[in-house]
View 1: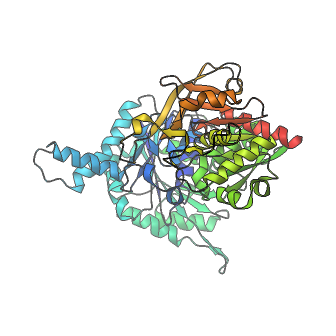
View 2: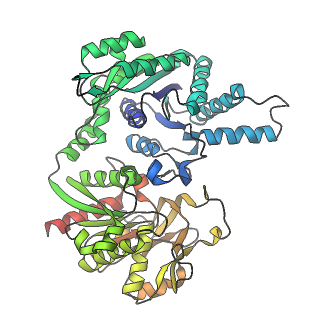
View 3: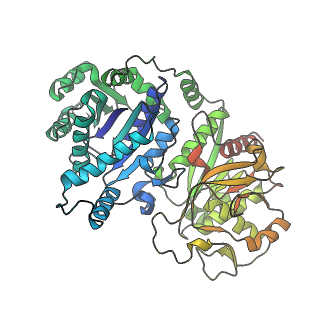
Length: 536
């Protein structure tokens, strides 16, 4: 296996994840088998307990691992299916070291950062290598910025690992900021020089430098960076701000032939140039669509990254229908304060995403009611599905006090209640229903139509509360259809209203399985319904 390590300098959120994912796209289109992973230096075991306001969405893998949102980019930009082995945090590393010490596995030795902690990091690299013998290239992004105290052990582990597997099998890529100083009217290379100098102090010489820049990279700047950072000029690559969509990033990096630089460094130069025609067609559909729809996402986390996978899934579905999806981010509390018609009166579709806590719940219920009564396409995901059933129970079944026990433990009609296996669970991290589960899809339903009449599906979950089966009969008699249940437990997975052009709620998270040229069928159906609504 060949190894690519992506580090970052100067500032966080510089685009290391997109750089790694874009490189994965280019190498995969060269015919190579790619796997991407992320090492995060924070002490959390995983991001599952982090606030979306601080860290963005939690991306869930097939095996139930709660991971960093960058793994969503990795899966969307490549065909690789990731597992919990592809996300390592300092919390996991230290937890493993301490447990080994308690079991006496270090044979009485003094446990130290070097070699014991760095060895634990290298173990993950070796394990991923052994468990993926068909993979040609493993790309590893190191979170944070070079020089951060918490990241030093990861950098040292990579230095040691390079000596073990041979420098000819490793390529180090360093992503830095190339700021444009408006007052001076010029691009400054000094932050890049300082960042690379810090990396070299730690024993690592980058092979390729990716310069994150608003403007293009002129030859003088390229030459200066090459000289002061001890790399060839052709290995200084521009990573420009893209104009329309992040899916332009692989095409932008291809302009400086970064894939050729990488394969030459790690001995895979015999591979053909990337065949990017399909990717380019997708990008063109995103940039130059024929149609346009406006879809409101009625959530509670205003941060762009809090619903990252949902936004990307809407883009995928829009491109599939040659349609630009304009996303209107709506605070659920605004719906509650101003009324649904005032906030949502001009949209072509309403999506209520997942979330936790009772803030904004009544606003989401009003949004679902407005969509149902005005025949506006509605798509509820996780909590959004639960909201749809609560709203239906209150206003169609006339069950006064219908609610979820998450928000009101003593409500008169607990339409949504805590899963039985969750009763008594005190730990917050990794204790929900997580990961891919099989569900049965009932024929003759909208869900069956969207899934191409598949009899069963596999979708990823992340929730503690479920639809209460005690109310199944009441809602069905009033016109709501349960179109899918879990294969093992019979838990409700999809609900829909046949009397409505498109009103569907899914207990799982379909956004975690949507890809650029393969939009998730539920998102594709939702955008198609919104397009039809807009044309009427």
